[in-house]
Length: 365
Image 1 (cartoon, helix red, strand yellow):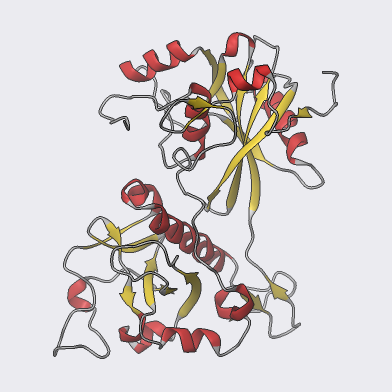
Image 2: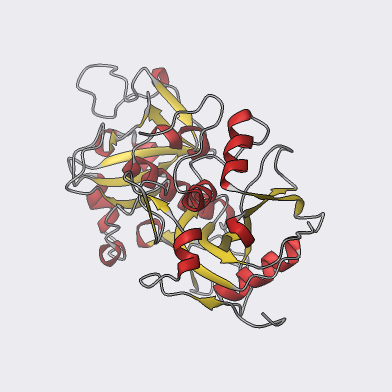
């Protein structure tokens, strides 16, 4: 590929022979060509019905909060309330009035076909953001069934997605990611970027409106590409980022710049970070990563280059692996791979053709 040219984007429905070799997913029965499967992605395609058409109604949120069956997720200081191993879904109408007078966001309606602990299928879910986490002993229902009954279960614990995501089901994980994303946005954008005035929360928590100039501001999402680079002999190129521990090897990633397509970002980021020119790329799947507001867009890219030169700033080490070499290095503990909560791990195992065992980890059968 000549400098500055765009990569060829293959049709996922008609992969080339090279694609069929390099782009594999594990569906439980064997390697197949195609996009990332639900089994590999840390958050599945199932999601809440966000009822975006209803959220603009100024009475909608109040009505939903006070109707029987609506459940609330409590969130504070980057952590959500959990009941044991699951996300805590609490009866919204029983929450203390002072909590409901604060920042409340409508998240959506749970799928009808999925059973989730502590919530009925089809329940509406709201997010209640508190100044600080509360303990069961200090949380008392506004309308308790018994005098002094605690609202929070005794096994309540507060955790963020990185701590609890691996033990949640796909619906709970999706709820927690959405809650984290919208809570981060509210925390970081209390004022109007035009005039500096404190904004008012409207549209059931999904818009902030400036009372001075009338401008409306919406949640921000920053697109970032994340790539498995596959070279000659189907070897994969992984790198150690400046913020990673020294044994960690992961896929390469970077933010999409203004006026840039996703494919252009893939070409630019790989060249900038490791000096490798990719010749083709293919989109595989995505994952919200609200730390603070990213949407990770997964690609695979091919190259004929065999030498990678880390830039020393974003990437400190770069290394080529065959499937056998990667399995051996991960299995012995010589290197560590990203958590299965991240699309990075999904991309690596998509290329590998199955799950990669590490010390102390279980591989699904």
